Length: 276
Ligand code: NCC
Image (tube, rainbow, N blue to C red; front, side, top):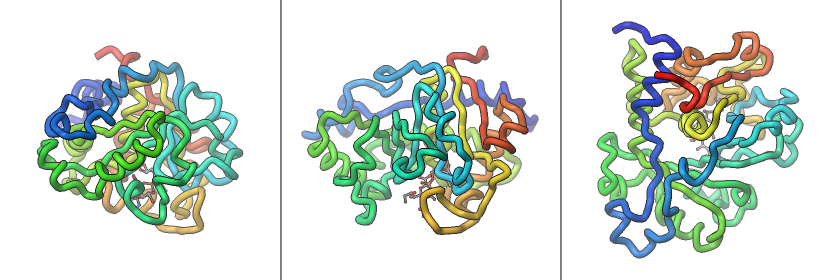
């Protein structure tokens, strides 16, 4: 199989990965009383387009990066899971436009998802590993974590905050792009929140800068910039095909290798800015 160039890869992802969020008209949700809690429209028609966007990974190598100011100059900033800004502004900035969270964060006791102020800034987007078939009914009957129960509870407590749920099809369409562009067989688990968020922002922005997804010279085994826990698997992946995700992003990068080394910064074009 011929190895695709960066621009070819970008076009494949643009054409083959549909950025879809759940709406009240979709089966089986349409028949449920809480369907009206779901946003009426797709996230891609509700927000953006933005000129420049920053994707802030949660990597330990953001620590002492001093990237905060640069990150905050973007028109929109996406962060992940429980990654805080308070106390870390110098390195990660303080603006949060979108927070992408996995269903584990929504369900686990120690994250205090329903009450913590961490989640009340910006637009929430959540996801849960769906079945490979991407069948909504099958997923609904067997989610990894109780995403729908927690969604309903959160919406009741914070009815004004926009909150989207990603269609599991997006996870697997993206997974397929990774697999089809790798020589090895990769684990059949959805891509990490970091890659899902990067592709989401590519559909909302003209230019996307991704920080410390590809590790800079600050590369460390420290898992997160906000915790004292170390594990190389945080950067290389265990459950998620993270190493392969990073390979793909490296191929699509339109910035220099120097930018990666110095700033941990990757530059990707928005889907509307590429001609396929
Ligand atoms: O760690 P996590 O990811 O929240 O990180 C968000 C995204 O940043 C990128 N990252 C992170 C650390 C690192 N050293 N290098 C990186 O490149 C990745 O792209 C990552 O997706 C997730 O993807 O949702 C994940 O969530 C955590 C965990 O559920 C949440 O942090 C909540 O505690 C998962 N960890 C565990 O399940 C133990 C992680 O595997 C994936």
